[in-house]
Image (cartoon, rainbow, N blue to C red; front, side, top):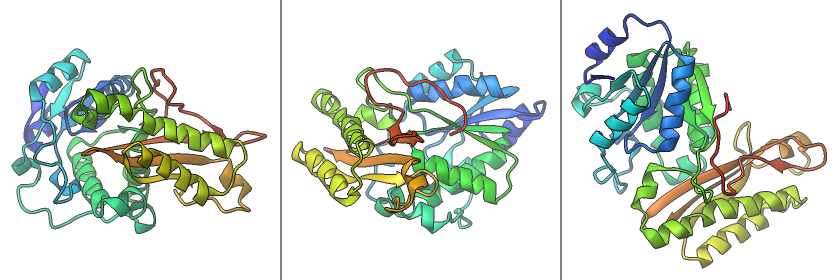
Length: 303
């Protein structure tokens, strides 16, 4: 595995290749990242990963300074997985001057859910992702569906800016008990880690209620949040939305009711966790997939 620190060094390493496949990360890698890299190796003529903790997507009170940096472990995992090139710029390499030019995503998609609770988050994400795309110039870029809204925002950005990149979504990788793999799971002590599975279970219960025919979403979502809160969580949202635009389905929108995603974000102690379950059409009722029941999720193609 070759490591590039500067943009010029990266471009020199990638010059012989025509179709890089790219996985952007903030480090502290887990099996979900490695699954993305394995998929990247199948798609491109060179696999590229990046490690960069992007200050622009953290709010002032969030964990930028304490975000886990596990450089030696990450390099060993990437090399063992067959990564060809690691781009690991320092902040001064990627932002040699204040980043006053930024990407402003569509507020209709980016200012709801995660964007509501983390204002400016998707501006930071889109700005760094576009800059990384310009550095790597990938043919394919791979993102996990655990960050469902982020995947949608990045895909829309690529479409609207006519970037020659295929965005590939991969199903969420899960631990044996169903918890979605996340770098922030490392913040959880043993007791909190055992409790954390209640988030995907709450999403499953919410999905099952909708599958069973309930349409009183406001009441359903309130019940789901209250149930988590009773266990000591501080939920931001547990909600049922349409997959196409992340808006609530209307009562008379039959098509919308058969293409749903259930999303949740909640704090367990000081750790904020997110997860989702995607839904697909079913002739009789809404049927949810990507179950958080105990199994390891497998990779899929484009979401």
